[in-house]
Length: 263
Length: 257
Image (cartoon, rainbow over all chains, first blue to last red; front, top):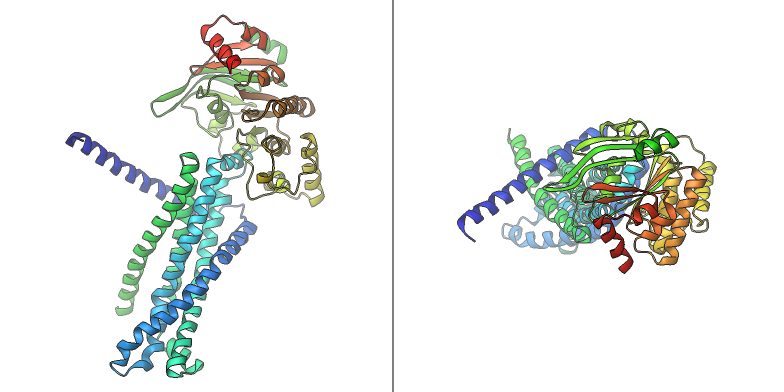
């Protein structure tokens, strides 16, 4: 490949990425344009929320519980060096509420829900089901995208709260086994260290993560091409992009909440 | 000359297309198409794969926008309509997809009732049930309501796809390759169904196909779309006997196949 061809390939890739960003922006803007317009498909939103919740519940239960136990086990030796194991509930409470609960839930949902939405919509796209809706005078964006994005935005914060509860319970089991701490004492210590800002930023993060997972899954599915090959590609890209954006948003929200905390 | 004679016989066209151009990137698919569909008429559009047949009906259904030219469907310009006006026009057009495009996650009953419930308010459960039963009866599959699309044969899926469009009582039917991928017996059944739909619902239809049997048994008129333009239009026998080298090539190839 000579240098002229290389330059052409690089500039073409940059062009494609810029067009992709512009399309994603327009897709998101269309969501906000359509979300407040009737008809509101409440039944479909409830159905999707139920699907998302049910699909992820078992995995979040197991993962949240294990994270609670493992994080407690890993943190104990460091605190033992200072004779400060009584701080374990506070430490775990802060870590799980501020970061681990929302992040773990978002990552699990990005893998499970994001890929499922990406695959479902892309499969509908390549088999002309989305066009079939259009010719039946049904707005497929409103019926398929708006409902799913609302469902992920509402459900993932609830799952995140559930993950926090399960994680704290896992931590309590370990603390109780090692230090014989009572349940009331554990949760009192854990929640004393958590401020309103922690809860608020945790909730805000979960809402942003839920929205991101929904929009990315729908965007990749809705714009799938290349027939059946495109279905796998859309599902894969939905997971990778959603996870990347979740981490990016985590950094930004942590930074913003720290500014608020110290201001 | 021929066009004006048809106009006199059948009144104003329900679909009128003039100077239609459509390109995808540098590939020009339609290069100035002129076409009329008259009330109660079944027109088969014949042509090679990739000749722009499906693109033509997707422009009529406003799934694609034309680059140039005028498209008038039931007195409206679909490419200039938006929102409610476009939906109102689309409800008057039935589109049967090549892949049937049935909703995988819904059973047959839900596939049929979905467009109805989404487009008509205040329908009782009984009215919806009756409409579904009537549409399924029209395609001869009244006993399949609980089955999922994955459990149906190719021919049954095509029939359910047609029933789903009939439930909205369209005035125009657009069939995209209705017999592709089907065995000769099932193809004959679909051809018969297309004729029954025309008689029962008094529809005007465009049938996109490269299946000569389908064209011959369903169409009042055949139009050859070659190289992005209609090269010949008339009764099947007239087009079949054409001396045009490209048309002869198309028919000869299909017979060899």
